[in-house]
Every structure is written in structure tokens, then in C-alpha cells.
Image (cartoon, rainbow, N blue to C red):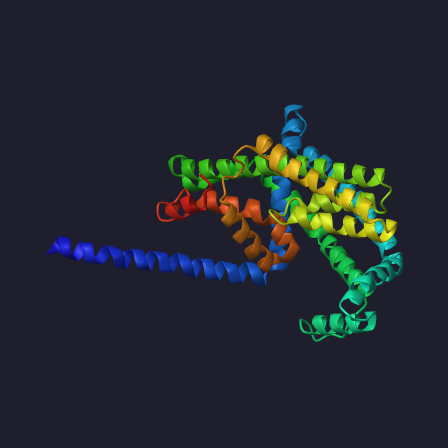
Length: 354
């Protein structure tokens, strides 16, 4: 009788356990969504700490004091972000100034296609305005105003730089002393599995970010060189775009090809040259993404492609473009953490690629 009650009780305990995890997940999602203005800079700062782990360790081997290492690395980050922002801002400003020309070219090319369907440019613009109005109550704005608004959002994101730097300084200051505090708080025996899990997360994320950054930089460099050889405007801007979007899995590399190909068509008016540029950019993305990256990164973070896609959608919904950029390392850290608990280990195995 006692064993029968035990058998009946076990499924009930499992249901309660999974219900508790579901409640925690829902509450955590609401908190992260509501306080995104704090958690996004904090998450970016954490990933920067991982990315800057190698130079910090290098300076530590030179016996440079901790405060001086942090000061040097933060100054280098600030200089890089300032120069990067100036470069992007200059290119966006020039691009915005030339938008009327590109807009005119767009509708002139569109007129050729519209004539085959028996439509005029005026009718097409009216349909375009109606299409946008179906997604927003705002009045139709010209393409130039839309791009200007997008660039404003971009600089709003850059405005969070000070938050990121503030979090970054404190996180780097806590980087070396944190394991010791965990040992003092939990005891040596209880702290070992916690530190082991954190070590796995640190190693996996740092390995991913380091190699992904190098591969993305290679992609952006090749894209810029290719466009410069063909004399395409804003070659550096499109290279920076390819570098940034390469961190967004699956769709980022494809999206980065569209703007330079469109600019090539508008600038040159040559379909042949446009197809050549498109072919070269797609080849760069295919070779780097499907040949170089798998060989360099190996198994990487061991995440299923479906999990990567779902994490991209989830974190994109949570935090927008910043969430898409952070989706893979964040999901990998969650998966490694779930592997440490018996109750969530089966779910972590489902998230793995192999």
C-alpha cells in the first residue's frame, strides 16, 4: 500500500516541479522585458567582460595591478566605440544626404516593372502608403524620414554606452574576487559544482565570442574590400553592417547583403555589375559561414539549429536588435546552467545539437 501511494505521488511531484519552473520562467520573462533598459546594458557589459578576458589575462601576466588593467582596457574600449560611432555617424549622414537620389532611382526602376502590370508610380506609392498604414496609425513618411528615424534609434542605443561602461568597470573589478566570495559564502564543498558550472559557461561563451568576433571582422573586411574594388559608395558602412549582423544567427548574413546590392544597382544602373557584386558578397558569406566558421569554431556552443532560431525570435521580441545580437551566448549560458540540475538536465539535452 505504501509503495502504491509512492508511485501515485511521484507524477504529482513532477507536475508541481515543472509548474514551479514554468512560473519562474514566466516571471523572469516579465522582469527582463519590463526592465530591459537596465538588463540590456548589463548583458552587453557581461559579454564585453568575456570578450575582454584575453587582454585582461595578458596584462595580468605582465604583473600590472588590477585597477590599472581595468583603466587601460576601458580606455581602449571607449576610444574604439567613439571612433566606431563617428565612422558610422558620418556614413549615415552622407547616406541620408544622398537618399533623394536613391529614392528617385528606386521609383524609376520600379516604373519599368510597374508598367508591365499596368500600374503607375503614383498608384504604387498609394498602395505602399496603405500597406504601411495597416501596420501603424502614423501617416506615411518618405523613405528618407524613415531612415532618419532608424538612425535616431541607433544613436539612442549608443546613448546607453555610459551604462555599459559603468557596468563593465564594476564587473571587471569583481572578476577576480568573485570565486573567492562564492567559496566563503557556500563553503568549499558546496561551491565546487557552482564554480565548475560558471567555469564551463565562461569557457564556452569566451571561446564563442572571441572566434565569432574574429570571423565577423573577417567578413566585414572582405565585404568592404570587395565593394571598394567596384567603387560602391559607403563600402565601409556596409562592411560594418556585415560585421554586426554576422552575430545574428541564420538571417543576419543574408540581411547584410541586401543594402549594398541595392546601392550598387541604384549607383551604377548596371544589372550585370549588380549581379556580379551580389554573387561575390553571397560567396563571401557562404565561404566564411559554412567553411571557415565550422572549421575554426568546431562544435561551438552545441546548440540545436532550431533552438538557435527560437532563441533569436525570443530574445529579439524581448530586447529588439540588441536581443538578437545577444541571443546565442545568452541561450548557451542558460543551457549550461540547466545541465547542472537534475530536474532540468533532460531539457538541456533537448537543446543540444549532438
